[in-house]
Image: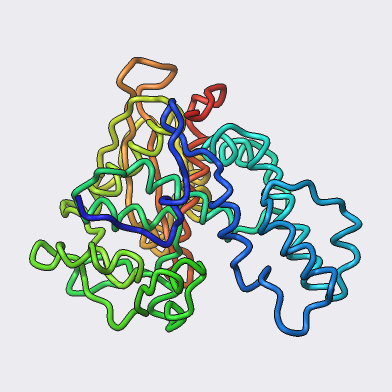
Length: 329
């Protein structure tokens, strides 16, 4: 089996008996290698002492006074955020349980970057053993912003940071540590080039065709179903739709802020203008293997006015009729 997403740090974790990822010292140390926390040459002695102490024992209790003694204000803020995030993870048996608890009302000031990184490594666990590059590329939508474009009638999504030219500056220090090359060009994932995904998975430089009836949309449905199964222990099927007319909208989930806004409008019975309709990138019908409170949940994915897609996978955890269920442990 070819490996993928080395930069997420999956190889630094262990898997618990229930299938969730355990918080290892090595995983915590990876955060200390981030440029925001690795003390620069001009860093004060207090910051260097704290960094060195945590490298020796990444679970060590940090007194708030240790952070307050750091001279640089930005460094103090970075350390406070990181320690709060670390302490939250350590209070839970798995990364999955920690993420779910954050999404259920305890996110606080946790940086979105940290949340996306959690989704990244959890999805690497969810998709371990997957041999379909289309599913893996579709999964990137859950933790990396995308930009949409129409190409010869096809709806193409590409990684926003890569096409903006900043993909060459790795967000994860593991990218540099592993010697992963910077992105060179963007190719649309096809049956002809899909095997190249394995060597390019950490470069995020392959675009995906999300058009209805093609492999990309179906692959995203597969990812959503596996995410829900792993995080909520719910067996579901997710089917792409070409449109949503005359359906009983008894339950819906917006997969992003724009999708939620459109779902709210449909729920109220508002008519959607052509511009709003054009922002819908994908529709899905989610059904439960065991009969529940609703026959189906409709999932709405939409781009914003700047043609950006910013999927919120947490909406699937808090928006489905299964809020009392716990994450995998």
